[in-house]
Length: 328
Image (tube, rainbow, N blue to C red; front, side):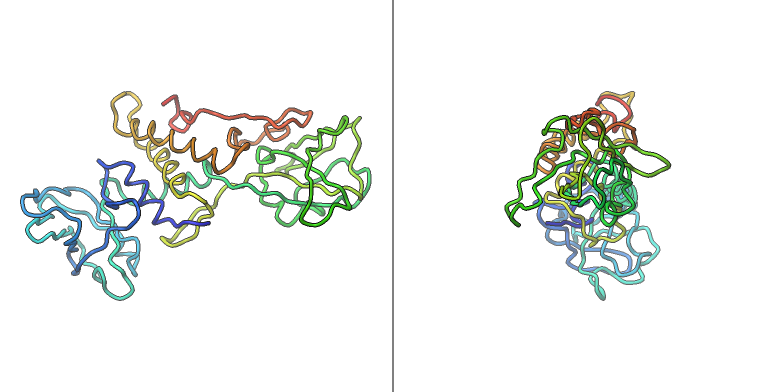
């Protein structure tokens, strides 16, 4: 299952209700009823007669699906809202293409923080807080070989996704003659004195099977259990491989709080948002990664991927207060 940047940002902004307006039901985007080069109308959501003209003062009108990049963001002024007509008038310059014009479907969001801050926070979250699990198989090409580099055969191909020892959770093996579709994968360290470690040397990740335990042979079938960080997204509809976009939204809020929170004020609104988002993030991280959820990722080290040198799967979890530079 996958999601998109727009869906994640819609959910993230909805988690911070004092900072913007992105949806009324968590399921659907806000969509304009009409548009002009200097304004946007929404007869379905925006407040009606009696709303202050300064309702959205200094906020940003964000059109992530605008056909032209120069039309994506406009600022709203002190008299930029008319409740009687439910029209938002921006401060300019005029749109090159009005909302609902051309390929634009009228999608919009309103946020007090510049939309590019939200986009940057999402990309930081993708690279540091959001991961997916993979199992990559390989067969030793030389019996008795103890050291392998994760960029050369047989650990090439998708193994290039591993750039840090901390990404490797486990080494497993199965029998050579196991029936396809009925493989029984077992942890390498469970049989006798089989030990392994991963480490980094010259910017390359290496895997070593430690004596006196046996080295793999060409009869072994092995796999590495790894976690891989997401990659940055640059367009509103770019796919993100996540089963739950709310997880990415909570991580995005944490990254926004890292940038904007006033740590000297315990009542700061971003600290509140971070505390709430952390609970959501941790719950969904457990659902997404299972037994890998309590590990630290992205830190380069010379130990066995957060495990002991003996190969036991370590837990290495960390409090997300570190995201804010201190405890939340």
